[in-house]
Amino acid sequence: MNGQDNPIDLWWQQVKSYAALAMERLKNGVEAVKEFLSSLTTDERWGVMLAFEEAQPQMFSQLVAEAPNWVEWMA
Image (cartoon, rainbow, N blue to C red; front, side, top):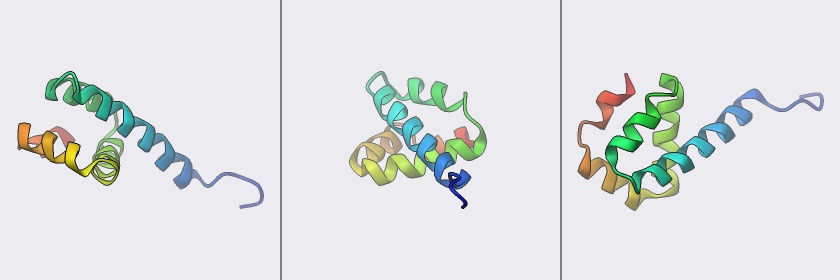
């Protein structure tokens, strides 16, 4: 793109960094993850959860087991 960064790639990199933060917060409990996600846009929240599942499927499964209603956080 004429030497410019692709905005979609930049967005995805940002979302991946948010996912890393969400994974770190899970150590403090599900509510810490929920609180963090509430500070993001809806698109970012969904992206974080996709990146989270991709990077750490077992940890993501733990989150889902502890918070089966996590989809409600996405709205």
